[in-house]
Every structure is written in structure tokens, then in C-alpha cells.
Amino acid sequence: MAADHDPAFRDTLLTEAVDQFLTGDFETGKAVLHDYINATIDFERLAEETGSSSKSLMRMLSPTGNPTASNLVSVLPTVQRAAGVHLAVATEH
Image (tube, rainbow, N blue to C red):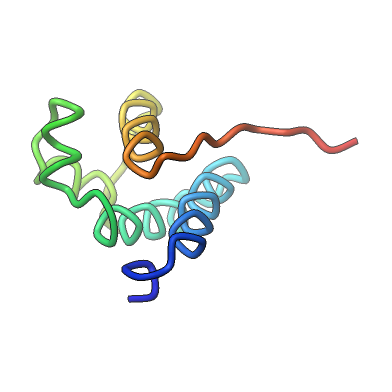
């Protein structure tokens, strides 16, 4: 996967996942975030850092998963911290 060797691509994946969530396309957002986590922090480390089980996190981001806002709020800061990036929402006028 290109994310394994390309930091810019990894950042784009994370941004795309969040963009999809914000526009209401949760299915794509979950899929992209799942791929991002697999290519970077991995579910075991994410589980350790969020206090959730890795199986629960994988299930949450699976095609049939239904993450709550609180689940996403616990995951997103952790993956940002691991990536060394900070995402922010900007409005367009």
C-alpha cells in the first residue's frame, strides 16, 4: 500500500476520512479510516491508546459497523497524535 512509504499519502487518507464523515458519507469515511489505521498506527496500538479492544475498533469501522460520535472522538485524536498531524475544520464563504 502506498501509505506504507508515503507520509503525504497517509496525511491525505486521514484528511479524506474526516472529510467523508463531515459530509455525511459514513461508509466511505469508515473504510478510509480503517485503511489508514491498518497502514499506520494499527488496531492493536490504537486499542492500547484508547482503552478499547482492537476487535471492537475493527468492528466499529467495518462495513456493518455503526460508530457513535463518542467512538470517533476517541479514535481521531489518537490517530492524529500518532501521525504527528493536527486536522482542523475550516469554513468556506
